[in-house]
Length: 437
Image (cartoon, rainbow, N blue to C red; front, top):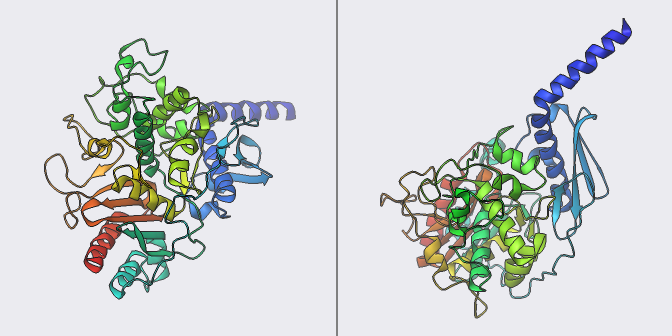
């Protein structure tokens, strides 16, 4: 009898795993990566409150030993490991990684790293208060979740503030703001002649209509590959991030849902696939961001985490301090000029901010990695801001706002899953324009 019960239990557990195994692995992968990155990259120690919640939290056990963090269900089921490698952050992998030596990146040439900020004007101080919900009940402050703000005017750092537990040296995850950085990095490689926007036949296995997909299609997210950006267990985006060791290969394996250029569909897969192409084309692998934009701009805090195949996860996994995020915005504002050197094609930002109207889009006003204020129908996304404003946006309220006509860059990092951070940052930018003249 006892043997029969055990056998039935084993069969039942096996059935549960076959049914729910991928979902459980997604959850444990998410937990392992978060725990590893927060400890080793950000220097934080509370994954439960620092990043979006995991529905499996009540059933997860996360443990760390050295540079490896392991998450499992109830300490036994569907374990996943995240491994930290200096310079490259954390990667989900079941075995040690061979990512090579990271290029040394110093803060040389970055005007914001050691900048001393003068006391902001009373008007700007009040604007920062509003952006942090200062004086409001703790529940309101927590719901808004602002963790760091940096304001740059005409190339000078004029204001910054941080929440408790964060400071100017704390790297914060930009999530999809990483895509805008990928656009800049691609522009640098175009300037160097390594790639071109109209390059096609990007993957050797693409012998069908996918061979027509170009670098520009991937940047504009109109490549046509089947995709679902819904952050839920079992969707392509969570499968890519938490189940696939070769994320670019996984995205490349997807079929076409639309002909290239016909439909614009927001896709983190497109950006990570692009970086697999760039990493292969340059031979730089996981070191690609460090060899290009990090070193050139002096982004000494920046870490772009790779997958187990060594591809930088350019859609989602860039960590940097708010000051370094502001430097990225300033680089874009200056049209790719940095310390007297033109690092982007002279028309790169103009082209990046030109929206091609496919007629069908789930993200109107999305150019090549940036969102524009002027929408395809001529209306303004942010009516209170100048028409030339544009932004990099990330999950849970990350926002990098650039306004060339005002010489203004605002970087906002935080954790805002239940409120609109965009309205707060837009108001801050409008207040800064009024306060700074």
